[in-house]
Image 1 (tube, protein in one colour):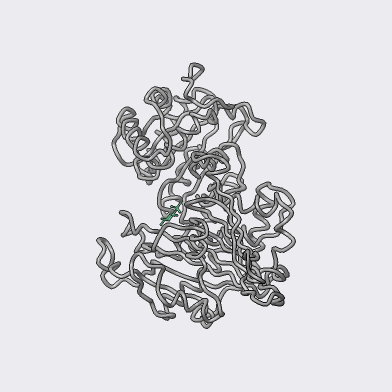
Image 2: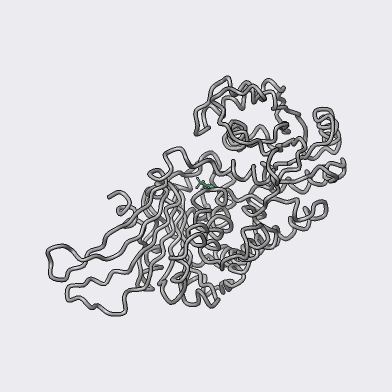
Length: 506
Ligand code: BG6
C-alpha cells in the first residue's frame, strides 16, 4: 500500500482522521455475487481506495450462494468495475486493490456457515478489527442473517465496532417495517444500524441542505408566505431492467416514494437542525413526516394518481393482469407553521420521457401588476438533482426597448461549470465512507422509516383494496397520464419541469 502508483489520488487514509478508531476494518458483503456488489459497491470501494480514503488496513469479504474461489471473485468484480465504474483506472491500481478481496460461499440460513465465516474472518484479520456487514439482499433475509451473526458472536463490540448496512426496501408496509425493526433491534442497537437510501448519498441531494442553510438569502422566504407550491419529480427513462419479477410485487410507491421522494421532501421542508449531526438532522426530518396527516380514502381518491405504462403487462415476469403502478403523482400537505396550505406535488415513474430529477419551488405571484404590460409570472427556483446538476432561478426583467414589458430570464449555476465534469462521485462512495467513519446522518433512522410507511400505507391500502382512483395508463416515453396533469390543473397549477428544462438548455 505504501508504493501506490502516482495515478492514485493523494489524500488521507481515513486512518488519520479523528473519526476513525485506527483499527483495521473488514467489510463483509452478503449477496456478494449479485448485481449491486458488482455495479456499485466494489467500484465505490475501489474508488475510495484510489483516493486513499479507505482505512489503511482493510479487507473485503464476499459471502454468497455462488461457489467462487477468491480468484474467480476478483475476476468477476474486475469485469464489473471495468464496465460500471464511472472513472478511468489502470490495471496497476486494480492489482494493488484486488488482494484485499476474498470470498466465502455459504447459505444465509445455515448457522454452521456463519461459524465458518467467523473463523475465516478471525484468520484473515489476525487481531482486533472493525466489521461492517453489508446486506446487499432482499430484506426478508435480514433477520436470519442477523440472528446467525449474533449466534456466532459476530455482533459483539469491544474496541472494535460492529455495524450493519441494510439495503432498501426496508419492509413492504408499516407492519413489516415495524417487525423488521424489532427483529434487528434484538441483536443490534440503533447506532449500529445503517439503513441506506442511496438518494441521500447524492451530492446534489445533500446540496439541498447547503443551499438552504449555508446561505442566508433563501431561508427568509422559504415558507407559506412566499412559496405557492413545491414540485418534486423523479422521472426515469428506463423501465424494469431485469427486475420485473421484483418490481411487479412492489410498484412505484414502495420502490420510489416511501424512500427517495419522501426523503427529498423532508430535506426541502425541514427546519434548520441545531447541527449537522445524525440525531439533530434526523430529528428534524422525522418532524416533517409527522406533520403530514396520513390520507383518508377520500383524500387518496382526490390527491393521488396511479398509472401503468402501456405494454407493462406484456413484459417478461410481469403478471398479465397486473395492477402494479409504474407511475404515481401525489399531493401532500405539511401541517405546521411553515408550510400550512402549501401543496407538495410528488411524481415519479418508469419509462417517462427522460431521466430527470428536480425540485421546483414556485413562489407566489407579486401582489400587484404595477407595470402596464406586465405578465404575471411567478419566480421559480429549480434544483436540478440529475442529470445536468445545478440550480436555477427564474425572475422577471424589463425587456429592452419596450415601454414596460416584462420577460422571464434565468440565472443558473451548473455543477460542471463550477467544479468540472468529474466532480460528482457515486453516492455509494459517500455512504460507505460515512458508515466506516460512524456517521449516520445520511442514513434513515428506524422511526423515520416507520413514519414514512405510515404515510404510504393508507395510499397503498386504498389503491389495492378499493382500486381507487382507477389505474390510469400512459404512453411510454411520455410525461405520464392525463390524470397526472389533472391533479395540478384542479388546483389551477401545472407541472413546470419541461419548461424548467428548457431554461437549463437555453
Ligand atoms: C432504486 C429503485 O432505489 O432507485 C429503482 O429501486 C430506481 O427502481 C433507482 O431505478 C433510481 O436511482 P437513480 O440513482 O438512478 O435515480
